[in-house]
Each structure stands twice: as structure tokens, then as C-alpha cells.
Image (cartoon, rainbow over all chains, first blue to last red; front, side, top):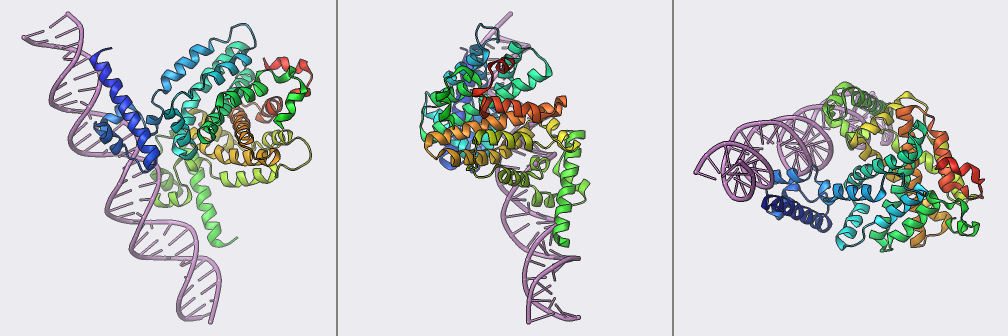
Length: 199
Length: 199
DNA sequence: TCGTTGGGTGCACTGACTGCAGTTAATACG
DNA sequence: CGTATTAACTGCAGTCAGTGCACCCAACGA
């Protein structure tokens, strides 16, 4: 990597790091962009070269994650049930590897502005999932609405699982996979006994 | 109703009306609060007495709707499957009565800031739905996460259906009810034949 | 070595939103 | 009635997020 690229990546990383730290220690509303930039040793103007909004600094690697997710999901023409595949990719892709990520989801439960930003980032995933399902099902108007509805639902389950992880520490992958599987995977041939626990 | 109350309600209504009109004709970003207030014949300061944010003016009756929804949903201790009841109340409660509402959902598909506001308002519904399910299921940590996950999913289906209505004009109640029913209602004893169309 | 490029800066600006100290007219009350 | 109170609304000064623009300087390529 270039010295320039290195510089850029490092500045961005530092900004995101201090942003998340300040958000979680001092509160989101109480933290100004000026403070974040100051802590990272750059000018406030520079902050906006790296993040389009103050909230975006809490989700620094979003684009990369969407790219990874898109790759793992594929084009909807694999053999097998596309909904089952979607459940797999979504639930197993939940990243619970670092305390930083958990901090992020703890913040998400508290700060409305971050939930709004999260909703915006979720929309990118929604488009990917919807495109995947439309590719698998065909692109009638009804299939499109159906695809978006299921994408919304599936991402809602992921979000709630991750926030639950942030607050209660329960592994979100299990609960997410189970609920997704029952809801959209292929619960239709599951033994009836397993159904009761949903209620 | 008081003359004062009347005045207040009327000002609020007028502000919301002009806000939605300006948003949809001139664009959300291009419309300033000063313009909305001017069109409604009040000062900009007054706008913020009625709406906490510019975006909130696009959802003027949100609190009332949440109240209605909460009432219709009940406390989760009715006889019968609570998930089925949830599907009923959600899908049949979708309000498609006026062109104004459709304009709102058309805007929602285009304007990120409004989607963010919508996500915030959706959170109120999420709390109501989650509380309802927790009441029906008990309040273990796992049930709580499950309740929030299903609430997120169900509201995601409603949102996508309504946006689909805005864009394609398809009655959202039918598609919403059908998808909700299959996903969370009680699809488990449905004939297998009906399942295939999901895929 | 020199032109170019890209990360960062400074400054002036817009626009959302807030706190506070009014004004005015509807209402409650003696 | 007349008077005190209240509530809708206003004006103003301020904070802060975010943008456009001209600029600097160090790294890079030829």
C-alpha cells in the first residue's frame, strides 16, 4: 500500500476509533465533530472528507461489509432453496468478533440518531437481498414487493438479534438463525412440535 | 374543542400539509423550514413548537396512530394465537385511505432523511408489538429478543408493502397480510402447495 | 527535477434546531 | 364585569452539522 493510501486509511481508522470512544463515554449528542477531529489530531473539515455525517463514523467499514455480504450471498441461481441460503449467509455473517462491535450495538439501542444511520445502512443490505431474491424469483411487481418485504423482515431479525447481543450478551447467530429459519427458511416441513415454542 | 385547541390543531395541520406539498414538489433537501413556516403563515420558530424536526412534519399524526394501534392490538391475553392476531391488526390497520398518505410513502422511497424518520417512528410500533408479545410469552431474555426480532420483521413487511403501494399502487393490505401470515402467523399447518409460490 | 495529484486546512456560509425573553389574545376566576 | 393567568406564537441570538472553495504541501510519476 502507498504511503498516501496508508495515511488515508490510518486517519479514517483513528477518526472512527475516537468517535466511537467519545460517543460511548460522553454520549452521542454531547460529542461534537470538532472534538472527534481534535482527538484524532486533524481539522474538523477533514472529518467530513472521511465521513459524510457524524453518525457515519460509527459505521466506518459499512461499504466493505456490504461488498463482502454481496459476494457471500451470490446471484440467487445456486442450487437449493434461495431462502435457506439467505438465512445461512445472514445469520453466519453476523460479526461478533470484537468488543468494539458490541459497543456499537449497545449504542444503537440508546441513540436514536445512530438507529437512523443504521436504518440507512440497512437499506444497502435490503437492496442486495431484494436483488438476490428477485433474481431467484423473477422480477414481476409482486415478486419485487415480496422480495423487499422479506428483505426487510430478515434484516429486522438480524438487527434485533445484534441489539439483543449488545444488551444481553446472547450469541445472536443462534437466535437469528433459528428465527430466520422458522420465518422464511423452510419451516413448512418442520415437525409441528417445534412450532409451539414460537408461541 | 377550545378556540385555543382549535388554533393549535389547525396550525399543525396547515404546517404538515404545506410541508408534504413542498417536499413532494420541490424535494425534501431543497425545502427549508423557513419556507414551510412561511407557506403556513407562521414564524419558523413556531414550526418547532409543533414538530421536533423538519422530517417529523411528514408524519404529523404518528402519536395518534400508535395509540390506535396499541388499542386495537390489546394486551396479548386474548384467546387464540397472538401472532395471528398481530398479523390481523397490522395488515388491516394499514391506512390507504387518502392520496396524501400515498404521497408520503412515495417520498419515503426516495428521501433518505425521511426513511430515517420513519425508522424512528417504527421504533414506537416495535416497542408496542414487542410488549404485546412479551406479555403473551413471558419476559425471559430470550423471549424479549425473539419478540423484538419478530416485531422488526413484521414491521419491515408492513413498511415494504406500503412503499410498494406508493410505487406500484398494489393494495398493501393483501400482500402484507399474506406474507405476514406465512412468515409469522401460523403457516405451519398450511397446505404445502401454497408454499411453493413463496419461492 | 518538475509537474501533478491527493490528503489535509482555513474560512465563510447555509440551515436545522434551541433557549430565552417577550407579546397578545383566549380563558378562568373572583 | 374586571383582572390574573395561560397558551399560542414571535424575535433574536446562539450552537452545531455539513458544504463549497481556494489553498498548502508532501508524495508520486515521468
